[in-house]
Length: 247
Ligand SMILES: Nc1ncnc2c1ncn2[C@@H]1O[C@H](COP(=O)(O)OP(=O)(O)OP(=O)(O)O)[C@@H](O)[C@H]1O
Image (cartoon, rainbow, N blue to C red; front, side, top):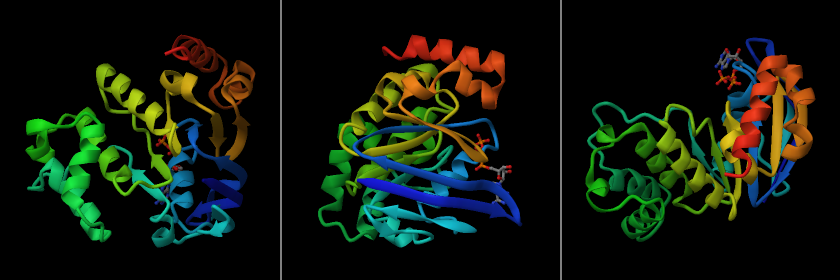
Protein backbone atom coordinates (compact mmCIF):
# COMPACT_ATOMS: atom_id res chain seq x y z
CA UNK A 1 0.00 0.00 0.00
CA UNK A 2 1.35 3.40 -0.96
CA UNK A 3 0.03 6.82 0.04
CA UNK A 4 1.36 9.90 -1.72
CA UNK A 5 0.43 13.42 -0.72
CA UNK A 6 1.45 16.22 -3.06
CA UNK A 7 1.46 19.89 -2.10
CA UNK A 8 -1.46 19.33 0.30
CA UNK A 9 -2.92 22.65 1.37
CA UNK A 10 -6.08 22.89 3.47
CA UNK A 11 -7.80 26.05 4.62
CA UNK A 12 -10.86 26.64 6.80
CA UNK A 13 -12.69 29.86 5.91
CA UNK A 14 -9.69 31.04 3.93
CA UNK A 15 -7.34 30.43 6.89
CA UNK A 16 -4.60 27.91 5.97
CA UNK A 17 -4.26 25.01 8.37
CA UNK A 18 -1.87 22.89 6.31
CA UNK A 19 0.42 24.35 3.69
CA UNK A 20 2.16 22.54 0.85
CA UNK A 21 2.70 19.17 2.54
CA UNK A 22 4.53 16.54 0.45
CA UNK A 23 4.84 13.03 1.88
CA UNK A 24 4.91 9.42 0.84
CA UNK A 25 4.27 6.32 2.98
CA UNK A 26 4.49 2.64 2.17
CA UNK A 27 2.94 -0.19 4.13
CA UNK A 28 2.87 -2.39 5.98
CA UNK A 29 4.15 -0.32 8.86
CA UNK A 30 3.30 2.25 11.47
CA UNK A 31 3.32 6.01 10.86
CA UNK A 32 2.81 8.29 13.87
CA UNK A 33 1.78 11.88 13.19
CA UNK A 34 2.62 14.24 16.00
CA UNK A 35 2.39 17.96 16.68
CA UNK A 36 0.86 20.32 19.25
CA UNK A 37 -2.87 21.03 19.65
CA UNK A 38 -4.25 22.68 16.55
CA UNK A 39 -1.23 21.63 14.43
CA UNK A 40 -3.49 20.15 11.75
CA UNK A 41 -3.09 16.42 12.53
CA UNK A 42 -6.80 15.56 12.30
CA UNK A 43 -7.10 17.76 9.22
CA UNK A 44 -4.23 15.85 7.62
CA UNK A 45 -5.91 12.48 8.26
CA UNK A 46 -9.27 13.73 6.99
CA UNK A 47 -7.69 15.06 3.82
CA UNK A 48 -6.09 11.64 3.18
CA UNK A 49 -9.47 10.00 3.80
CA UNK A 50 -11.13 12.31 1.27
CA UNK A 51 -13.35 13.80 3.97
CA UNK A 52 -11.94 17.28 3.35
CA UNK A 53 -11.36 18.74 -0.08
CA UNK A 54 -8.01 20.49 -0.04
CA UNK A 55 -7.62 24.03 -1.32
CA UNK A 56 -4.64 22.74 -3.30
CA UNK A 57 -2.75 19.51 -3.81
CA UNK A 58 -3.56 15.86 -4.37
CA UNK A 59 -3.74 12.54 -2.58
CA UNK A 60 -2.89 9.25 -4.31
CA UNK A 61 -3.59 5.77 -2.95
CA UNK A 62 -1.63 3.04 -4.73
CA UNK A 63 -1.20 5.51 -7.60
CA UNK A 64 -4.92 6.29 -7.97
CA UNK A 65 -6.08 9.81 -7.31
CA UNK A 66 -8.29 9.88 -4.20
CA UNK A 67 -8.43 13.62 -3.46
CA UNK A 68 -11.83 14.45 -1.92
CA UNK A 69 -13.24 11.03 -2.87
CA UNK A 70 -14.25 9.26 0.36
CA UNK A 71 -16.11 6.51 -1.54
CA UNK A 72 -12.88 5.51 -3.25
CA UNK A 73 -10.84 5.85 -0.06
CA UNK A 74 -13.35 3.57 1.68
CA UNK A 75 -12.10 0.70 -0.44
CA UNK A 76 -8.58 1.15 0.92
CA UNK A 77 -8.98 2.50 4.40
CA UNK A 78 -10.63 1.84 7.73
CA UNK A 79 -11.01 4.85 10.02
CA UNK A 80 -11.18 5.15 13.80
CA UNK A 81 -12.19 8.72 14.67
CA UNK A 82 -10.98 10.68 17.67
CA UNK A 83 -12.89 9.87 20.90
CA UNK A 84 -15.24 7.29 19.45
CA UNK A 85 -18.49 7.49 21.32
CA UNK A 86 -21.57 5.33 21.41
CA UNK A 87 -24.69 7.27 20.59
CA UNK A 88 -26.34 7.46 24.04
CA UNK A 89 -29.53 5.73 23.00
CA UNK A 90 -28.02 3.33 20.49
CA UNK A 91 -29.54 -0.06 21.18
CA UNK A 92 -26.81 -1.78 19.14
CA UNK A 93 -24.71 -4.51 20.62
CA UNK A 94 -20.98 -4.82 19.99
CA UNK A 95 -21.55 -7.64 17.51
CA UNK A 96 -24.37 -5.84 15.69
CA UNK A 97 -22.28 -2.67 15.35
CA UNK A 98 -19.51 -4.47 13.46
CA UNK A 99 -21.93 -6.74 11.59
CA UNK A 100 -24.10 -3.82 10.39
CA UNK A 101 -21.13 -1.99 8.96
CA UNK A 102 -20.12 -5.14 7.02
CA UNK A 103 -23.69 -5.64 5.73
CA UNK A 104 -23.77 -2.05 4.47
CA UNK A 105 -20.70 -2.94 2.41
CA UNK A 106 -22.43 -6.00 1.00
CA UNK A 107 -20.09 -8.44 2.76
CA UNK A 108 -21.51 -11.96 2.92
CA UNK A 109 -21.41 -13.95 6.17
CA UNK A 110 -21.26 -10.58 7.95
CA UNK A 111 -22.17 -12.04 11.32
CA UNK A 112 -19.44 -14.69 11.25
CA UNK A 113 -16.86 -12.19 10.05
CA UNK A 114 -17.87 -9.68 12.77
CA UNK A 115 -17.48 -12.28 15.51
CA UNK A 116 -14.19 -13.50 14.03
CA UNK A 117 -12.61 -10.04 13.91
CA UNK A 118 -13.87 -9.17 17.40
CA UNK A 119 -12.25 -12.39 18.65
CA UNK A 120 -8.91 -11.39 17.17
CA UNK A 121 -9.10 -8.23 19.29
CA UNK A 122 -9.83 -10.24 22.43
CA UNK A 123 -13.56 -9.47 22.51
CA UNK A 124 -15.63 -12.58 23.07
CA UNK A 125 -18.33 -14.13 25.21
CA UNK A 126 -20.89 -11.89 26.86
CA UNK A 127 -19.21 -8.68 25.69
CA UNK A 128 -20.29 -9.47 22.12
CA UNK A 129 -23.90 -8.94 23.15
CA UNK A 130 -23.26 -5.92 25.40
CA UNK A 131 -24.69 -2.57 24.36
CA UNK A 132 -22.13 -0.06 23.12
CA UNK A 133 -22.98 2.41 25.88
CA UNK A 134 -22.09 -0.17 28.52
CA UNK A 135 -18.44 -0.31 27.44
CA UNK A 136 -15.37 1.33 28.95
CA UNK A 137 -13.52 3.77 26.72
CA UNK A 138 -10.74 1.23 26.14
CA UNK A 139 -13.21 -1.46 25.10
CA UNK A 140 -15.12 0.98 22.88
CA UNK A 141 -11.87 1.93 21.18
CA UNK A 142 -11.21 -1.77 20.48
CA UNK A 143 -14.71 -2.21 19.05
CA UNK A 144 -14.18 0.75 16.70
CA UNK A 145 -10.86 -0.76 15.62
CA UNK A 146 -12.68 -4.04 14.94
CA UNK A 147 -15.26 -2.25 12.80
CA UNK A 148 -12.51 -0.44 10.87
CA UNK A 149 -10.48 -3.58 10.09
CA UNK A 150 -13.42 -5.97 9.54
CA UNK A 151 -13.47 -5.42 5.73
CA UNK A 152 -9.69 -6.10 5.77
CA UNK A 153 -8.55 -2.70 4.43
CA UNK A 154 -4.96 -2.17 3.30
CA UNK A 155 -4.75 0.93 5.46
CA UNK A 156 -5.99 1.81 8.95
CA UNK A 157 -6.25 5.46 9.95
CA UNK A 158 -6.66 6.30 13.63
CA UNK A 159 -7.03 9.66 15.33
CA UNK A 160 -5.43 9.63 18.79
CA UNK A 161 -6.36 6.03 19.60
CA UNK A 162 -4.44 6.13 22.89
CA UNK A 163 -6.16 9.23 24.26
CA UNK A 164 -8.95 8.96 26.85
CA UNK A 165 -7.95 5.41 27.72
CA UNK A 166 -6.52 4.40 31.11
CA UNK A 167 -2.89 3.16 31.31
CA UNK A 168 -3.78 -0.55 31.19
CA UNK A 169 -6.12 0.00 28.24
CA UNK A 170 -3.46 2.09 26.51
CA UNK A 171 -0.89 -0.73 26.77
CA UNK A 172 -3.42 -3.18 25.35
CA UNK A 173 -4.39 -0.91 22.45
CA UNK A 174 -0.72 -0.15 21.72
CA UNK A 175 -0.08 -3.91 21.53
CA UNK A 176 -3.01 -4.32 19.13
CA UNK A 177 -1.81 -1.43 16.93
CA UNK A 178 1.71 -2.88 16.76
CA UNK A 179 0.23 -6.18 15.57
CA UNK A 180 -2.05 -4.56 12.99
CA UNK A 181 0.85 -2.55 11.56
CA UNK A 182 2.70 -5.76 10.71
CA UNK A 183 0.03 -6.52 8.11
CA UNK A 184 -1.13 -3.13 6.83
CA UNK A 185 -0.25 0.53 6.71
CA UNK A 186 -1.37 2.19 9.95
CA UNK A 187 -1.48 5.99 10.15
CA UNK A 188 -2.20 7.40 13.58
CA UNK A 189 -2.00 10.73 15.35
CA UNK A 190 -0.67 10.93 18.87
CA UNK A 191 0.33 13.30 21.63
CA UNK A 192 2.47 10.62 23.23
CA UNK A 193 4.24 8.47 20.64
CA UNK A 194 6.58 6.91 23.25
CA UNK A 195 4.52 3.79 23.91
CA UNK A 196 4.76 2.70 20.28
CA UNK A 197 8.09 4.24 19.36
CA UNK A 198 9.85 0.88 19.10
CA UNK A 199 7.24 -0.26 16.56
CA UNK A 200 7.14 2.97 14.56
CA UNK A 201 8.59 3.15 11.06
CA UNK A 202 7.98 6.83 10.35
CA UNK A 203 7.34 9.82 12.60
CA UNK A 204 5.78 12.87 10.95
CA UNK A 205 6.00 16.15 12.84
CA UNK A 206 3.54 18.77 11.66
CA UNK A 207 2.66 22.22 12.88
CA UNK A 208 0.59 23.73 10.06
CA UNK A 209 3.61 22.94 7.84
CA UNK A 210 5.54 19.72 7.56
CA UNK A 211 8.36 20.11 10.10
CA UNK A 212 10.06 16.72 9.73
CA UNK A 213 9.41 13.16 8.62
CA UNK A 214 11.50 10.01 8.87
CA UNK A 215 12.44 7.07 11.08
CA UNK A 216 12.26 7.78 14.84
CA UNK A 217 16.05 7.76 15.22
CA UNK A 218 16.27 10.67 12.75
CA UNK A 219 13.19 12.62 13.78
CA UNK A 220 12.37 11.84 17.40
CA UNK A 221 15.24 13.96 18.66
CA UNK A 222 15.39 16.96 20.92
CA UNK A 223 16.74 19.31 18.23
CA UNK A 224 13.80 18.48 15.92
CA UNK A 225 11.03 18.39 18.54
CA UNK A 226 12.27 21.67 20.08
CA UNK A 227 11.15 23.42 16.91
CA UNK A 228 7.48 22.77 17.69
CA UNK A 229 7.28 22.03 21.40
CA UNK A 230 9.95 24.23 22.99
CA UNK A 231 12.96 22.96 24.90
CA UNK A 232 11.60 21.38 28.08
CA UNK A 233 8.69 19.55 26.44
CA UNK A 234 11.01 18.26 23.70
CA UNK A 235 13.41 16.89 26.30
CA UNK A 236 10.54 15.23 28.21
CA UNK A 237 9.22 13.58 25.04
CA UNK A 238 12.62 12.20 24.11
CA UNK A 239 13.15 10.84 27.64
CA UNK A 240 9.71 9.19 27.57
CA UNK A 241 10.59 7.74 24.18
CA UNK A 242 13.78 6.21 25.57
CA UNK A 243 11.62 4.45 28.16
CA UNK A 244 9.00 3.27 25.68
CA UNK A 245 11.15 2.41 22.69
CA UNK A 246 11.91 -1.04 23.99
CA UNK A 247 8.33 -1.80 25.04
N1 LIG B 1 -14.26 22.39 10.54
C1 LIG B 1 -13.43 23.37 10.92
N2 LIG B 1 -13.73 24.67 10.68
C2 LIG B 1 -12.89 25.66 11.04
N3 LIG B 1 -11.72 25.45 11.67
C3 LIG B 1 -11.36 24.18 11.94
C4 LIG B 1 -12.19 23.07 11.59
N4 LIG B 1 -11.58 21.93 11.97
C5 LIG B 1 -10.41 22.30 12.55
N5 LIG B 1 -10.28 23.65 12.53
C6 LIG B 1 -9.12 24.40 13.05
O1 LIG B 1 -7.98 23.99 12.32
C7 LIG B 1 -6.84 23.88 13.18
C8 LIG B 1 -6.27 22.48 13.09
O2 LIG B 1 -7.22 21.58 13.65
P1 LIG B 1 -6.94 20.02 13.76
O3 LIG B 1 -8.10 19.43 14.48
O4 LIG B 1 -6.58 19.48 12.45
O5 LIG B 1 -5.64 19.99 14.70
P2 LIG B 1 -5.01 18.81 15.56
O6 LIG B 1 -3.54 18.86 15.34
O7 LIG B 1 -5.68 17.53 15.24
O8 LIG B 1 -5.36 19.28 17.04
P3 LIG B 1 -5.57 18.42 18.39
O9 LIG B 1 -4.24 17.90 18.80
O10 LIG B 1 -6.07 19.48 19.33
O11 LIG B 1 -6.58 17.35 18.10
C9 LIG B 1 -7.30 24.28 14.57
O12 LIG B 1 -6.98 25.65 14.74
C10 LIG B 1 -8.81 24.08 14.51
O13 LIG B 1 -9.46 24.97 15.37
